[in-house]
Each structure stands twice: as C-alpha cells, then as structure tokens.
Length: 128
Image (tube, rainbow, N blue to C red; front, side, top):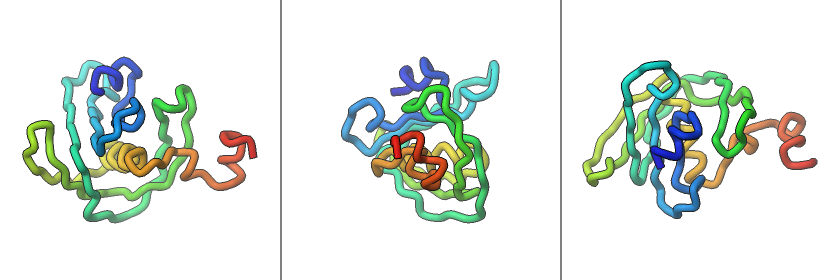
C-alpha cells in the first residue's frame, strides 16, 4: 500500500482504495515535503476517539487524480490503532496529519471526498 501511495504522490491510502477488505490505512505526511525523510505510519483497525476545532482544507484524493476540493474537517483528532506488528498506539494529530487521518478513515467507512461536498458542488461528480 505504501508503494502505491508513494507512486501516486499521495500522503495517505486506505486498503479499500486498492480492493483490500481490511480496516487499514497508511499515511506519510513527509511525502508532501520535498526531500523530507519518510514518516510512514500504518494504522490497523483505527478509531478516532476525540475531535476538536474546525478547519477547511484543500484536499486531493488518489481516487480522483488532479481534483482538489475544500473540505471541512476537525482541526485536531486523537486516533487509536495498532501498527503493522499489532502494537497499540495513540496519536494526537493536527494539521495535515489530522486531515489525512480523517480522509483515510472516511475511506474505511465507504466515504469519499465527494460525499463531503454540498449538493451544488458535488453534483458534477455524480452527474446530478
């Protein structure tokens, strides 16, 4: 999954985006910065346990190459998950990491960025 994310120049990828029926996603927000060292995080069975604040962020998605949309999200999130070795961890995230966690978490629940658009803005995606 990480290789597919890196190949697409993304910062996150959910298992459901590559046809895998597991609640897993990968995120590397350092992939958004030129020459930054990898900061790959793997989230297995993640659960967002706390949220606060609101922010609008211009998001892209590997499922819709070249498309960016302003999406309203929580500004900060706390997520619990297990890593690739089954070790539980908790992260308090803000900025791009918080946005990426929410974006990929949405994928695990079958939601896409177009589902977060209003009916007037989202209609061109769905043909309505």
